[in-house]
Structure formats: C-alpha cells, structure tokens
Length: 304
Image 1 (cartoon, one colour):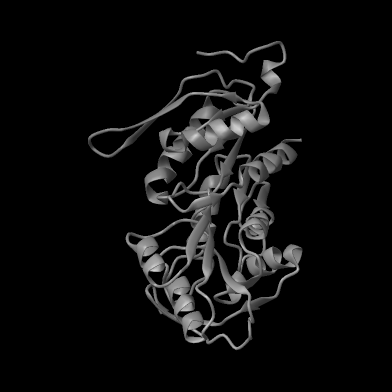
Image 2 (cartoon, one colour):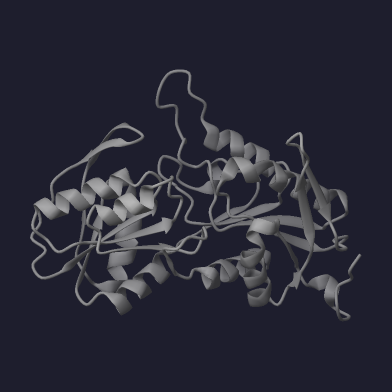
C-alpha cells in the first residue's frame, strides 16, 4: 500500500477515481496539490462489480471523482468505492462530480412515477460526507441541500462560459430555449453586459418539443444558445429552427453537460448551429470550456 509523501502527507487529500475518470482525477489532484491514489474497478462475467483501493486512505480526506455519465454504469461502482474507502478508515469521503446525474426527475410529473432525484440523493448521502458538483440541474429543487443529507455545494459554470463568449463572439445575444435555462442565461449575460432572451418550450415527449418564436430584434448580434444539459438535443434543435425562421445568423450552441444521446450531437450540427460547444464536465469532442479551476477552487473551499 502506498503512503502519503512528506511529514504532512496525512494532511493532504487523496484523490480516487475509477478508470473512466482518471483524467479528471489527475487534473484535480494537480490543482489541489493532492495525492493521486489508485483504485481498481472490475466487472465480473456475471455483471457484478469489484472495487479495490490500492493505497492507504486510513485517516485521510478522500476525494472521489466521478462524472456520472453514463450513470447506470457508474453508480454502483461509485457507491462501492466510497463505501470501501470508509471501511478502510478514511476520515472523510467527498464526492467530486463534474456532472451529477439524476437531478431532472425532481417531481412526480405523472401518477405513479418515482422522484428519482430524491432516491439517488439518499443513496449517495449514505456513503459520502459531502458533495461538490458543477451545475446540477436545480429547477423545482432550489438547492442540493434540500435532498442531500450531507453538505453539498453546486458550482456555477457561468463565469467560464462568459469568458469563452467574451473571447469568441464579438456581439453576442444570449438566448435560453425555455424557462429552466433562465438561471444560466442570466448568469452568462450579466457579466458580458449583453442582452438576453428566454423562449418558451412545450414538451410532449422525450423527442417531441416545440419552442416559441423569437420576438426580439437582435440587430447585428450573434445568438448564443445556453442550456445546462444537452441530451436528445431536441430543445436546442427546435430553438435553432425558430431562430432560422426569425432570419437571425446561425447560432452558437453552448451546453454545460455534453450528455448527448446517440446521434444528438450530429443532429444539432446538421440543424444549422454555427458551432456546438460544451464544458469539460463530460468528455466529448465538443468540450472547449474548461471548468477545472472552478471545481478545484470549490473543493478547496469545501474542505476548509
């Protein structure tokens, strides 16, 4: 078992992650000056998971990095990894989630549905002492503390999105496709001092949505669509179509989390988007906005 380096090694946090999240774990460890630990996850032929922590976590603060996409492949290994660290004597185990899943089903929309945001929160709260996440989907739930039973910090990506827009777009107008996007649209537009508009969405199914027409005159400004999660892409695609009907320039589409169902990214590009850009919370070819420093700063504040 590896030991912490230096006389104050026990005071340094140790960062763990399964193979799929090793790059994010290395970046976080480097930013924090933390130790990068070793963890192994293995799936048996029958589909069950084995977790092994190959470093000494006794008495240490452990940061477990997991971007939860695809969530159902990662959830149990994540749970087992945190539980193993606790079993091995970790002083504190904190989840660092660039993307925190199971936040959208935050209400019972139809009779008999489960409110999975609350159930998943109870699961994670049982093995973690804290949660740090980039822009979890907070809409009907006002804060992570409403459903998580441990301290939980939501970290906004808007400062880095605004920085990107400032560099890349001369005269932007920030557009939100629906009411849920307003919190991100406003937070991006205000530091830029540019206009912003929010459209209205009607959803009839996972891939069946309609967007209200744009009524504002954008003049010579470039529309920049901003939303937190791009999954099927239908919301952004329909917004791109509506903007095309309004005769404005092809929009730039920005999503915080590149969930992207199969074919969604290609469909969005083909719909007429001038560019599709995401934050690097989920690895994807569209990643062009680095939020790693925001995540590291939040973890640093969270740990003090």
